Image (cartoon, rainbow, N blue to C red; front, side, top):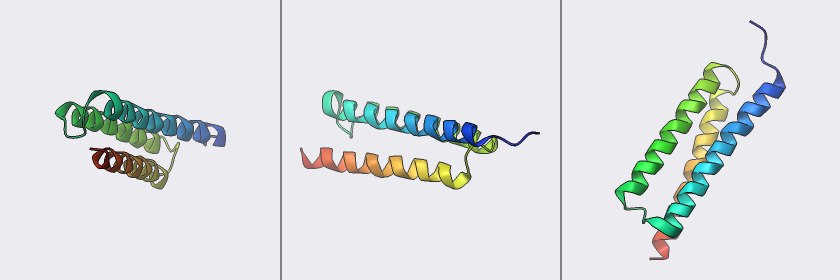
Length: 93
């Protein structure tokens, strides 16, 4: 099996980062306009999106497009940003 080129790795990382950014924007809009973080709909959307992203990352790792550490870092970074967003929404109540 041929070695995956750096270009494919960079594209995979960029696509996963874009998906993580989209999740963050989706949650920002939901907090600002639709529901509060305690709402079951908010939690369902967040859980579903995070699960989907983690599956994408697992797939990319299995294809050797990104390392396991890169995948963990993407998820951890998103979780930190979501926690900051959640705390900010709680303080504005």
